[in-house]
Image 1 (cartoon, rainbow, N blue to C red):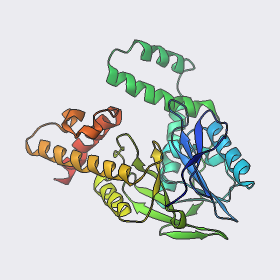
Image 2 (tube, helix red, strand yellow):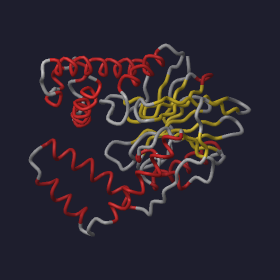
Image 3 (cartoon, rainbow, N blue to C red):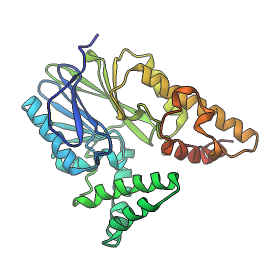
Length: 316
């Protein structure tokens, strides 16, 4: 059994810093901030590894400050768990090897420049007008989508974003060895995204999962393969880990992995039955799921249903 998780007195408007073990730390995003995701870092004794770098440069600066204050050292490696922008914008602040899969590198190099070109072409008053549009929007689904989009746009417009892709590519599992601990870096093909990485600190029973785990909310499946996500979730449930750091949501245990698995298996069964009955998957409601999911927000739930409409038809 690992020592009890401890919240540290680190001042940040964006995340709460937790000590998970003697050498493992998690930076958990505060609600309604511009953080974008969770991150964390581990001190191997002679090496510091940072896992993901947030959506916002101000937040990434706080992360670097946290590393230096807590460990007295500077980062030696960065892991990019996958290519989604809310996990990689802070890359440009780290002059160290950035480890990722080839799929992650290629996707960052393709999609981030395209995104920045589109954002720079927006009129100067776009953000102000969008805020007014959100205030007057009566349709709650549209309102949530607009709010989510604006959060993303504001983050990327706030700073001069430099595309900083990974520079150390791995195509197989590796171990980063340290004087006091080792970090197992494992690749996962086409699950949450085309390529994901998890980081395991086996002696502390801690696993950093990126977006292979969403806790207390619906996991987004729209850019990967839900069957493979089910497989990796099942695999981790069989392994000897106690704490899991999700890409979004609070620090988790196997209870949260089991809940994610239950949602994924349920929604696939319901969606396949809808197809068999020639009904629209997009019309599935949260009320069609088990009681545990009834209080979760429906934004990602509806995104997932839209994705499954296309994904499952392509499998037929």
